[in-house]
Structure formats: structure tokens, C-alpha cells
Image 1 (tube, helix red, strand yellow):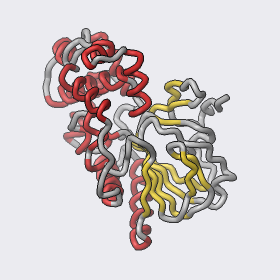
Image 2 (tube, rainbow, N blue to C red):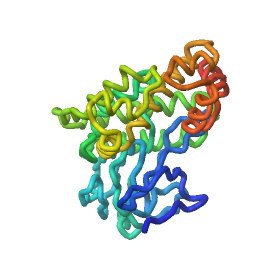
Image 3 (cartoon, helix red, strand yellow):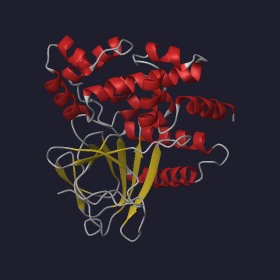
Image 4 (tube, rainbow, N blue to C red):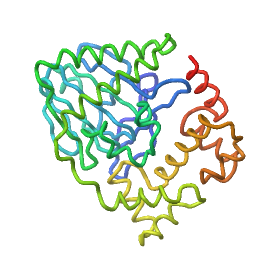
Length: 312
């Protein structure tokens, strides 16, 4: 049995529960807010946004920096001790094991939960390329990856994360969004520099799937169409893609389409009736429904907010 989200404490949205009982949480997108959450994990603090105390997975990325070690958690199916200076990168879909306050009795750490489009360099490229982008070099589709921050660099990491948390705490302050995005980029650059020099090779099946989506997402194709084009049954391919990337085949198709919708809303004045068929969506009504499900706001409001922020 899994522990349900606690109202008022659990900031993430329960998206689904896997057959083995593992809940998968989605990032709660808020209009006008950068999709980044920084949480200081400290057994002495009763923080309202502490991660769930049970085995779970996310559909977003999580970077964990351990200031003071203590206890262990399960990352990517492995029991992992938490030691001073450890840096753990957990990609979407990877399970994180139970971490009770007793497990973390002597541990002080930071977790940074984010979606890649919080970073300007990633927001402007296809989400199908995120997994192999240099900024996300420490994140490994095969499982949670780890590194150790050199001792002389640890004060700098603590300062970055403290400042990032402060900027996110006052999102309406002048320049807060730019500052937070720049700080997150700086953290990811530092993490990427600690990644192994020889990255894991891309999964050939996932590569074929993402290439097919990139070539066809503007057409009204379905997950079944993509599966048939690659010679698989829809059920098999959806399961395989979910297990290897944390998202289903349909979710990847939808993510690619909505990224293109956002680009067109930002860069053009085209009405939704024109944007919809150019991004593989049926019509403006369907576009609005999918957009609100994903981003928590309407396309028109998103366009106004984005342009207003760009002029600020």
C-alpha cells in the first residue's frame, strides 16, 4: 500500500500509480512561476515541502546535494548512503526509496526539483533532445547518477542553493525569475562538469522513437501510429518507453506538440485556430484543454504573461 499525498504538505500532483504500487508525481505548474522548487532537507526542520516519506517517482528531474551525510536512501533501485558532498541526479521515472526522518537523522541536504524548460538553453529546444543535452550530463536514463563535489567547492554549492531558494521565495520581486533561472543554469553547469567523461550511450529504441516523433508530431498521429511505423504494438512500445524514460509514448508526443505551441505563442501572433493544426492538435478547443492540463493556464494568458515578462 502506498501513502497518499498529505493535503497542505505534499506540493506535487499524483499523476498515476504503477502496477507495483509506486506513485508517480508530476510537477505542479503554476502560471507565471518558474518550474523549480528548492527544498532544504533537515531532520530538525518541519518543512512543508519535504519530499514524500515513501517509495515514489517523479516525471521531472531532481538534483540532491548532501551538505552533511547520514543515513541512506534507495536511488534507481540501489541502496545509496548519503555522504558529505554527494551529488545525486535522479531522472524522470526513477524510483526513490523511503526516506524517513530516522533515516536522515544526521543528514542535511538540498533537493532541486525542476522541469528542463526552467532553463533558457533547454526551453528553446525540442524536449526530445533534453535527455542528451550537455547541461543534463549528470542525469542518466539508465538510473540515478552520482558525483562528489570537491571539498573546496562545497561552500559555493551551499551559497548557490541558498540564493536560489531566496529568489524562488519572492517570485514577484524585480528580476527574480531571471536570477533564479541563471542560478539553476549555474548549478547544472557545475553538476555537468562533475559527470563522467564518457556518458552512457543513448538507448537505441528510445532514439528511434524520439526521431519518429520529431518527424511526425505536426501531423495528427497517435501513439499507435508511431508504434506501427517502428514495427511494434502500441502496448509494448508504450510500456518500453515509460520504463526507459519515465513518460509514456503519448506523453512524449504531447510534450513535443505543446513545446511547439509555446514557441508559436511566444514568437508569433497567430490565432489558436491556426496554431492547433500546425502542431498536430485537432482544433483550438482541444489545444486549450491540453494546454491547461499541462501548464495550469490558458494559451492566451500564457502568451500575455510571457510577453509581459519579456518586457520587464
